Amino acid sequence: MSEKKNIVIKVKYLSPGKAQAKTGSGAGVITEWNFKRIGLALGGALLVFISLFYFTGSEDQQPNATSSQLALPEQPPEIKTQPDKIVSASVQPKLDNSKVVARSRLTSDIKKNEPIDTLKLPLKISKNETLWIYYFVELKGMEGKAIYHEWWLNGNLVSRKKVNITDDPWRTASKQLITYTTNNDWIVKVVDESRNTLTEKSFNLKLK
Image (tube, rainbow, N blue to C red; front, top):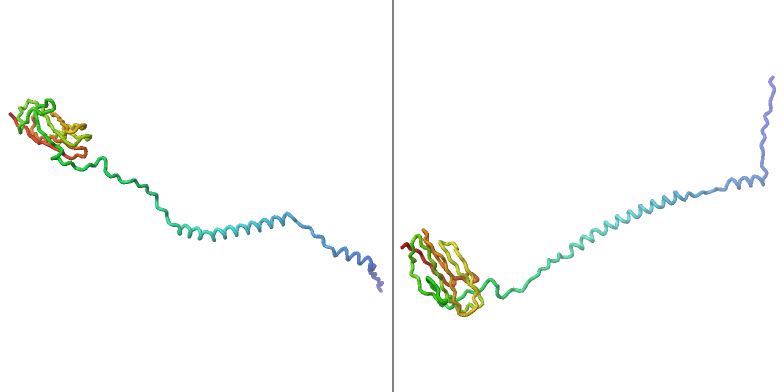
């Protein structure tokens, strides 16, 4: 027969005072705060909140800005005006030629401010001849103004001379060298500053 072995279990009971002390010390909880992580979390939350507020506020204000621009009328550009001139310097009323021109004639020469003769038309000239002729004009009521003597041949301006009038009445004359050509349609005229013709003479040449 096998021998019987006895198993002995020892249980250690704590005394009531010690058990209370152990239980009190084990129930205590020690809490340690991680301030760095807490700060990062709060900063991220604040950044998200600010971003949402900014974008939401800008979208709400945009329609108001557009409506205010449409409500304001466009201001027209400033236009500076000048007073109308009563009489333009380059535009003058047309003169009565019958009162302005006292005398006018073609002559072969001028002596003491007077024509010595009146040329007969058409003028007779030889092919190799040159001839000076004068256009004499006496004007009234033109003091302080200017006139122009113009000589035209076959529709082309040959010469133009300006005369300033400083007295009333005023006698003036211009001369032109004439030679024979195939076409000899001459016109000599006196015009004012507005290009109005005061007087004119037309003539032709004829071979001798």
